[in-house]
Length: 87
Image (cartoon, rainbow, N blue to C red; front, side, top):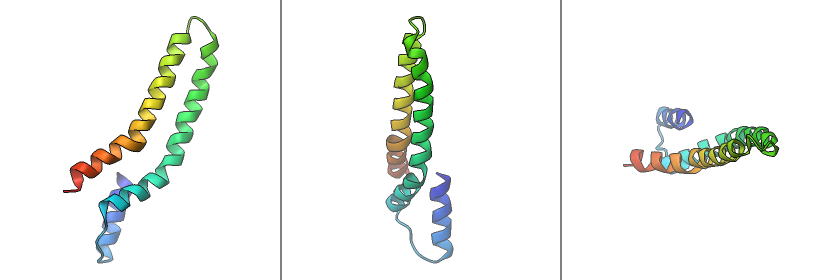
């Protein structure tokens, strides 16, 4: 959300209006690659314990939680932000 606030401040200082939806898309485009790479690295790390029968359930849980949190971060949180701040 810092990217969005910074871009809003820059637009206001330049005297132009900034569309919130466009700002959210620009911020998402900047942040999606690091978020996905971090989640992928954690999923690869969790996949190594998948072969161990004792920790297999933990690995499944970690993979699911990482995938769900990534989807929330990339898709749901920006939609909620636009919904609440777009008024």
